[in-house]
Image 1: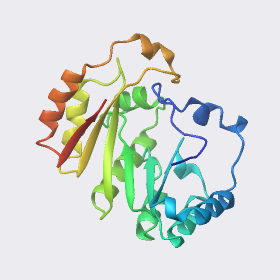
Image 2: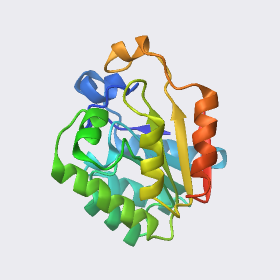
Image 3: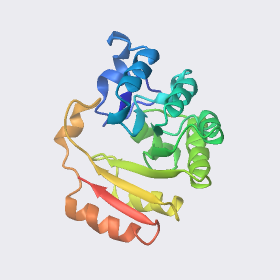
Image 4: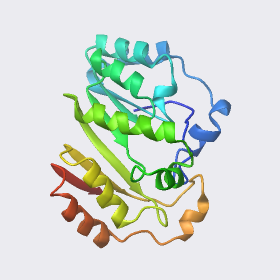
Length: 214
């Protein structure tokens, strides 16, 4: 699992605070150092998952994934879906084997702005395009939504499910209190596991697999 610094979203429930707002203070690790490490330890690994922050902001990502693929390893990408052009290029060049994309909220500007911390209709259109691209590809993939207390409702999850109807996998992630961007969320009661399981059962008729991660 490799984490990249920097993100174009400011999700209030993000637990990678240092990678989002403090990445410039973190030491850099050169990509060649990572590749050389993988070469020395090939017997230990089958795949590399790149996450963030938002990894598609890194211009060196395609080159890096290409080097990983040359080692015979699979590549996975976790993304917020805000860069469909790069995603499409990675898919076309077969540099990604698995995609995990966060869908923050129903695709309406008010709801998405609240969940992502960014208000941009252009960004929302890019997310929409990434969803279509992933669902239309041959990739193994999953869509995921973190159920942020006071932000994400059961109705929101059902609305997302209807939008991605037919998707291979949709994962509901329970909010975990901690060092998030907006610590006030730690004071709000999250949806119960029982409520999430009820929503999962309703979503199971819309997507192939719906999973709750507590």
